[in-house]
Length: 107
Image (tube, rainbow, N blue to C red; front, side):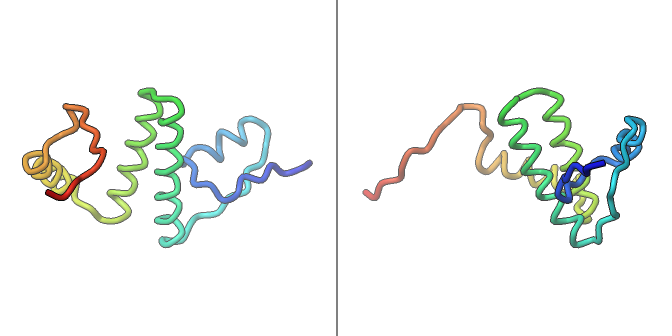
C-alpha cells in the first residue's frame, strides 16, 4: 500500500471519516495553535485561488468557512468587523463603480 502524500493540508473535520468510508486510512494529527493559525491562512489562499479558477457559490462558501474559522481562532469580534467594514465603506466607498487605478501623477 503506497501512501498518497498530501503534505500537511488543513482539512474539514469530517474528512478523515470520509476517507475511511472510502476504504483508505488517513494519517493526520491535531495542529498546535501556531500551526493551526498558519494552516488557516494557507487554506484561505488556497480557497481564494480555487475561487479565482472557478468562480462559484460553492467555492465562495469554502472561503466563508475559512474566514469564520479565522475569526474564531484569532478571537476577532464579527460585529466589530462589520462595523469596520461599514466605516471603510462610508470613508472610502465600495467596489460598485469598477474603478481601476492606473497611476497617480504629481501636479
